Image (cartoon, rainbow, N blue to C red; front, side):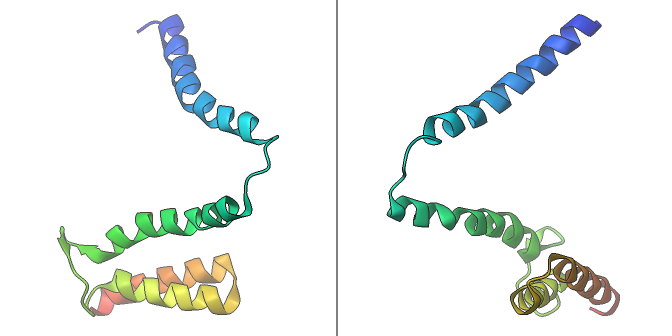
Length: 107
């Protein structure tokens, strides 16, 4: 594959991923969205994060494992408690990592 073709592929990938993100930004930057819509949009980050985290935390060895022997669920619970109590991203990540490490050692 020659360099020109590779550059065209990269530019094409940039175009199809960046432009769809940029258009709503320009279109909605001058528009006042209703308060109800803004409230609804404020829930999206938590919903998306939950959709990314929970399937991985519930799966163990290719099967759903919601039991007490699943270290990811313990880490999820501890991380949530630390996040709510401290509001510290670093402490939340460290506590979750330590719990997963200890859970894999002892569970």
